[in-house]
Length: 130
Image 1 (spheres, one colour):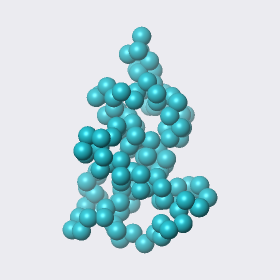
Image 2 (cartoon, helix red, strand yellow):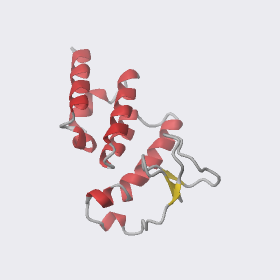
Image 3 (cartoon, rainbow, N blue to C red):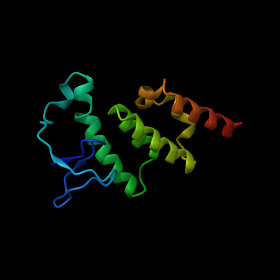
Image 4 (cartoon, rainbow, N blue to C red):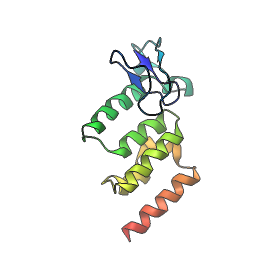
């Protein structure tokens, strides 16, 4: 398996050498995923494991029209990639995603709660609801 060290996307397909999100060259993944559910949720470990796999899965679903940009933003937020999370939230806003009203209560986005750009986005969403 290969992965992008910048956005942490996994690639299982053969012949892919560059990340489809940011164009970075992929590196071989040597991380053992077998015990990831039992690992403590530390900053180093949480970028791997279940969130890492969920991001890959959700990106594939999104490409098929079966996932929301908010879901992918939550995956990136849990991986500690605030920049990518905010990019996906802006995508959700521009597409008027049906998940927008629930951003405040989305636990996977809690990592963004103190970010000024996230707060500003929440204000824009609230103004749409009025």
